Image (cartoon, rainbow, N blue to C red; front, top):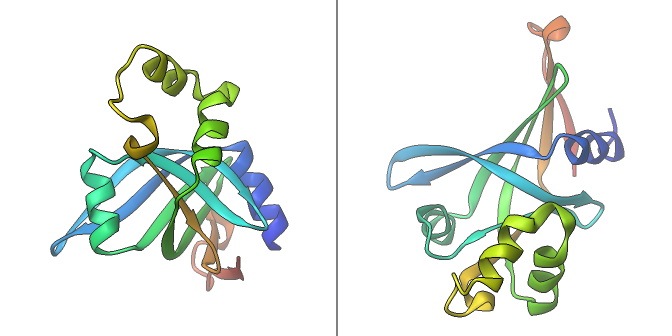
Length: 142
């Protein structure tokens, strides 16, 4: 599998599980992908959430996508993207109606300071399928 195949699979299956570390305790939660392409894997969260604090303290993470019988685990370091234009783009995207509704209803005191956008680039992806369960994982550089 090549990285373009991975970007397509995870874009078609945008819910993923993000693993972080809180002190010495692993934490995992479901997240929602914004975009995956040659620039990297992009998602967002609110700055008031614990996950943002955990990433700020330790930006090494793993993302796990389940894609129709194919599991893709991407690991690397996240970088914060400080771009109001990207935050606005995300908010206006049809898949982010929930975010736009909250913004319009005044949920955020300052929308641009309340949304953290992260990118994972130059990471690796490990591909797993049941038929290759006991074989070494395919590793793809992203």
